Amino acid sequence: MKRKEIVKVENLKKYYFEKRSDVITKALDGVSFEIYEGEFLGIMGPSGSGKSTLLHLLGLLDTQTEGRIIIMGKAASELSEIEKSYFRLKRLGYVFQQYRLIPELNAIENTMLPCYMYRSNMPGCKQKAKKLLERVGLGHRLEHYPFELSGGEQQRVAIARALVNDPAILFADEPTANLDTRSGDEILKLFKSLNKQGQTIVMVSHEPEHEQYFDRILRIKDGKLERIDVRK
Amino acid sequence: MYKKRNELKVAVFLAWKNLIFKKKTIAMIAAIIGLGFLSATFSSSVITGLRVMIEDKAIYSLTGNIVLEPPVGEDYITNVKEIEKKIRNIPGVESIDPRLAVGAVMYDPVTREKVPFTLYIVDAEREALTTWIDDAIVEGSFISKGTKNGIVIGGALTKKYSISKSLPTLDVSTGENVLIVLPSLGTKEVKVKGIYSLQFIATETFGFINKEQAMSLLNLSHDDLDKASMILIKTTEKGKEKEVIDMLKRLGLNVRIYSWQEKLGTIAQFTDSLQIISKITMVIGLIISFGTIYIMIYVNIMQKRSQIGILKALGINENTILYSYILQGMFYGLVGIATGYLLTYVLVSYFSTHPIPMPMGDVTPVLEYELYRNISLLLFGVSVLAGYLASRNAVKDKILDMIFKG
Image 1 (spheres, one colour):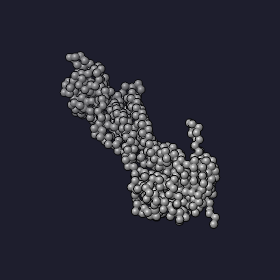
Image 2 (tube, rainbow over the protein chains, first blue to last red):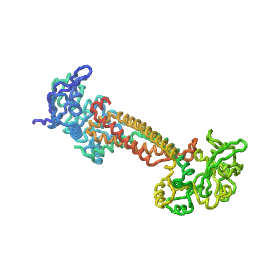
Image 3 (tube, rainbow over the protein chains, first blue to last red):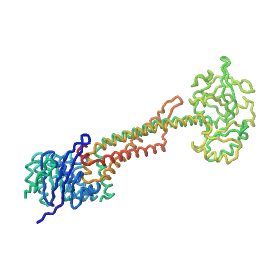
């Protein structure tokens, strides 16, 4: 059965120009690939290879120098800032390496925030946030603030937050890098379980032991796509 | 796309959560805005207090709220009793005080010192009702209706109470007799019944005797006493002068009518200058407050750049973030102004019971509510503007720069 393509990346380039020295850093240099609905895609490569830059561009957090990203039928370069923002809110979920929770909000408030922005229904969003937090194993930590949670727990809140608007794609930028092995494994198992339920996930990692979780792996080196490994 | 209602609801939610989480920040910013409010208002209220004190001393000793003077070319207002009858029932008139002025000189035969002064022949009771002279007695007592031999003199005429080093004075105390040289009547001896002092030299070069004594001392008849050099009118409240003057003009009296402002030329200039100083003080206070508030709120927002980046990454749009910081600015402004009111109220209340001693007398700060309202609105505006400008700059930055560079 032919899989549905939800993202198409064509000849994607991201260059950084050093104004003072006229040096051009090619963070990404002509990358092309597709993302299919329901897959767990890994982006792997050594430090400084351009993995995170690619994820930022896919997550509409940054703008490419050249090339195209067609995401769910829309060309990213043709979206205005406000349209990109709305797209991120409604269709994309993003998990950062360092959790990036809002310190003034407790777990349930952090989780429900994007939902409240989108739907403006406080009780409904709280209910949904509660269910998600229970699903990631934090049903007993709903009212806790980020500083009262461990790194693993904070990352699980961040995952629940990324899922609250039922995103088409969940992006994760080395989500286990700041966690101990046990917490990291739990997060990966959680991702795998979400993926099994149909959630498309794109995750950046440089840990070889994570390869087992991915359906496909984009291997990036020096800003170029070295190869795509298909695991199943 | 984004709905305005959603933006506002999320902005309120974020602002509220930020505020309740940062009680110390609120307290600090509120204290700074409060002190800014105080610095803009307190010195201004002291200067206003000084201005009001000077004006009141002049009004309630020299001119009344309104003063009637003889028509051009005449020395006296005649038919004073008739005029009084007409004026008495005008709404806004509290009391009337006709004064007959005579130029006189006090004389010390031993030192041969001569002290010129204006002798006012007055109805003692009306003088007491209209002016502050009777309240300003520092030695002895004020004249009364039955006083047959007694003069009340201003402190500036005496060595003991004069605050001037250049004006001539006599070494005289209450109960002692002084010689008074009157034009075409020669020298008369009068007992000093009291000495008054308003700590305001322009009001202390007078002497006061009552009408009964004037009849014997100056050989005046009843008809003579139906004349006046001026008639002081005290209104029921300061500020009613224009209203009363309009009614006085409609009576068609053969007099010139002046408000105290028109009459107190030099003093009015001085008090106007004080008003300008007061405004400058207030403006400087406001500028300092503006700078401080702006920096405080700006720094507070700059510390949250990373957080603003995260919010943007989550899809919270710029308007929502902007509204949230404007709301926080509004809150800081309101709490700061309330703190400022409280601080000002406490200080003004204290100085109302413990007036500030100044060479011209004790000054009580005066709260001018209109001024305070304007300062409150300005400081509120500054807080909102600081919240807006600082957050506008922040939300325009690139998401990744905000998140990773802070």
